[in-house]
Length: 91
Image (tube, rainbow, N blue to C red; front, side, top):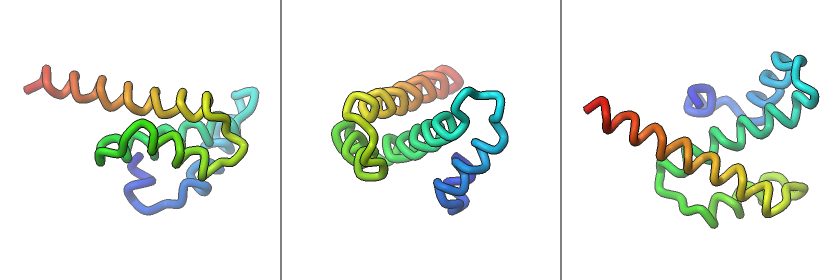
């Protein structure tokens, strides 16, 4: 997420990740999914709703099914919820 916050393009981040993860069976899939989740986490933190996340994912990748987009959006919401709980316990 730091790279996204620094203004690095998502495609460039995904390519870098794919190059680093040749141990994965499909490094480009892994990299794109990682970037999609990171972008959605940012949007969830900004208050974007679940349905809007799914539509945004599908707009960025027309090959993405609604079910797959929903899975990515759910992962992003879960991540944000877990980090909020963790931080509330620290306070």
